[in-house]
Image: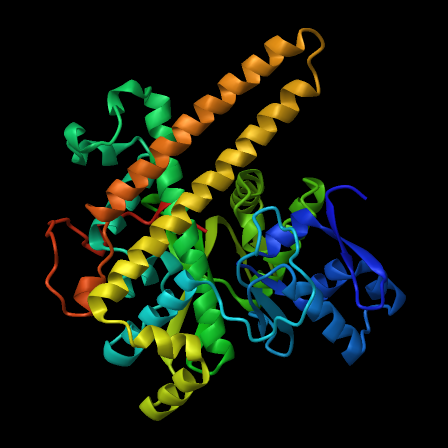
Length: 444
């Protein structure tokens, strides 16, 4: 088989697991039948989908070779079913580590810090009772500041026309910003935002699902559609909560598009992250709509919102912390050191995302030209080396730009959470009513 990783089980049986599907599981909530049929396809077929307790334990050990953490959570549409929520892969190429029992292994350090932040807000602050997107919750949990919130929405509304660069004095850049073309500036800003938002939303989502699984919070997920409505004044769009029947129709539509576009390796949020899928889904939602026995509504796009309620007393929280030693150790860190640690870990994680993307681009370049070119191999090598050098330069500039923004204009709001003196102050309008409801405001 191609594009798979081979794992040797305890009984010496060998299994091949799809790399694409493993990558799609990362930071994702996946139905358990999809997970186990992917992890051991042969066993799943042989048992006709009815695994024994021993089979599940064997599969779980295999999962532990790929992911730092995973746990069972309720299915969002059917509470009788169980899904599996995954953390991050050990390795960017989805390769496994040595086979051993990893249950109870602690998550990565950045995830631990973010869990501490969320617990601190839940314990000490009054949180909103409104349903909000994960991006909105990032601000409510002080993980992003008002400046990032406003800049991100402004730039997405303008299709990333690098408005952000206008706020920064040229002398502050660690490289010559004028050496970049308009297209390169556009891509740099877009990649910066995508890296930050994707990483932090994933961390927050995994954290919330973990706390829900552990009984610390009540978490409710809602699918909202931006509904097309026509009246005497013409067309307009408004938020609309999808009914259970409309949710079923949406799932049918997703599967139909997935089948036609041959996107079988994509699952959950990774499917929605595929631009081709999202474009086709939005087209079908607007043109065909979702038709049930009672309704036939057309939507510009759909997105998830979440409501969060605290479900623990102080005594229960203390017991939870004592049971999870990695959290208790984080609590002992002094606030300023805690914030400093978080910022270093965030910068490191963002740099890793740039590096992973860079290696993927270089691999694509190499495969593209070596598979087609016939002729002077020395000239080909020089050409590919030049392309790789350009990618490395762009990668370095992206990391420098990210570090600069996160240490200045887009620094987190944790000083406010811990009631510390803010290092720098910036005035940015964040009136929620000033933003028009738009798909670009609600990334998913």
